[in-house]
Length: 92
Image (cartoon, rainbow, N blue to C red; front, side):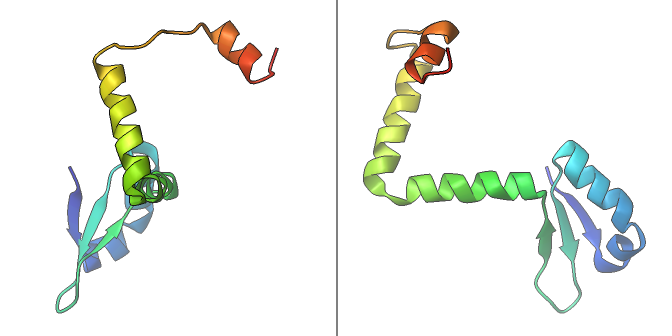
């Protein structure tokens, strides 16, 4: 769940809020009087969100990915060993 704080509090405690965001993957919602609230999130978290949005943008790709996820959740398909996967991609 997101941490909610005011702009004044965020400004006074910026270093600790930045640590909370980067170390604990917290999201901080900063409320600004008379303006839209803003969110403070880690760059890693934002990258993941943007990558997911990109992958799901194409309906065909989204369908393929979600079908694969469903198969994995249902424990369908054959598993491969780490050694076999490493051989397949040329790491061994």
